[in-house]
Image 1: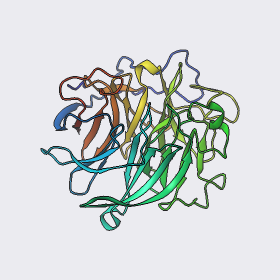
Image 2: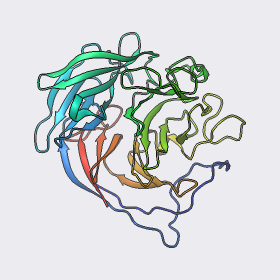
Image 3: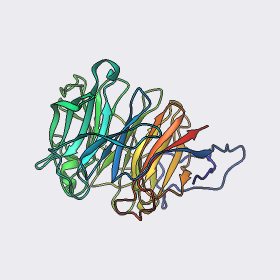
Length: 352
C-alpha cells in the first residue's frame, strides 16, 4: 500500500519559469531513500472525511464534511460521534471542513471548526466535553461561500495565532480585494480579534489565493501553504505577511512585479493538493486528491527539492498530519473517487 521513492537534491529557483511542472526526476548521486510503511489502519467506513486533529489521549477527532459530524476515533475502536453541527449546510465542496485544537487544549478544552453555513463560511469555537461540543462562539464569520472554492483549513501557528485558509468562492476578483475574506490566508487571535501586526489592519495575512487548503510551519517558523490551481498549475507557496500570490492574474510561476512566485508547481492532474504536514526540518508532505498520492519535498536552505512520491495506492488523499513519529492521513474516495471496500480510512504511516 505504500511506495518508497527517492528524494532528489536538485531544486528549482523561484526566478525560473519552467514550461513543465516540477515532477519526479531521476535520482542524483547521493540521493537518500526515505521509506513509508502503512503500519496501522485506525478507522474504516468514514463518510467523506475532511480534516483531523490528534487528542492528547492518543485518539483522533475527524470531521465528516457532508454528515456535519465530528467523530472521535480511538485505536482499535469504532468511530464515535462527538457532535453533529446543526448549522452546517453541506453542498458541493462545502460542509464541515477544518478542525484545530487550541494550543492550550489540555487546560481549556477548546476546539475550532470551519464550516459552510447557509449564508457564509465561518469559524466557530467550541468547548470539548464528554457530552460533546458545547458553548459555540463565533470567531470569524462572513467568509464568502459557494459550491466550490471554500478553502477550510485551520491551523494554529507557532506564534499562537489561528491561521485560516479560504477560497475565492468562484469569484477570482475577490482574491485581490484586501477587504474581502475570500481567497486569503487569514490570521486572528484565539478569540477572533486582529493581531496588531497584521499587514492591513484586518484579518488578512496574505492575498491573491485561489483555494488554500494546506497550512504548515517548519521549525524556524516558515509558513508553507498549498493551493489548488485552475487548469495549469497547482502551487506550494512560502507565505510572507502582506504579499500578493497572484490569483487570478497569475497561476504558477511569474516574474510580474509585486507578485510572489510559488516554490513548487504541479499539473492539477498530478496533485490537486489539499492538506499538508511539515516537519521541523522542513520536509513538506502534500496530500493529492486527483494525483492520488502524497508528495514529499524538503527545504534545502534557499529552495525546495524536487517533489517525489512518498506514498500512493490508497486513492485520493484529503488530509495529512504529523502526530509523534507517524503521519496520519485521511483518504477521500467517497467523494469524487472510486470507493473500495473499507473506504474512507484513517491511516497511520511510520516516518523514518
